[in-house]
Length: 79
Image (cartoon, rainbow, N blue to C red; front, side, top):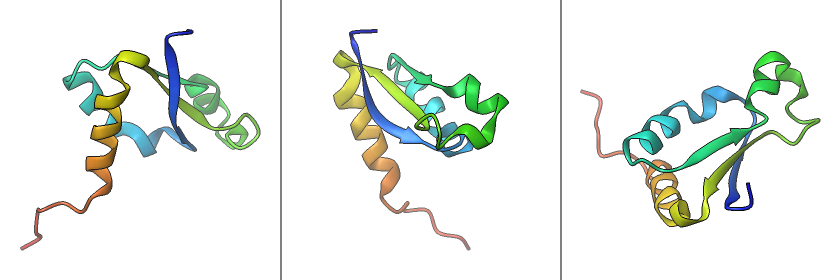
């Protein structure tokens, strides 16, 4: 795990559902540390420091770009 770095922390799995899909499409190497523990005991999230997104050091730039694009408002309009 020396080749992985934390680039984001989430409280609950629902917060990163879309992000997982985008990372898999781009073949970014990642894993969510503490994901299973918080799935079983959701109220432990703050106590154990949340769910940490660990990304391989070679994929960090691509992963951060995807996260940045998610933060911007979409061009989609509700009609």
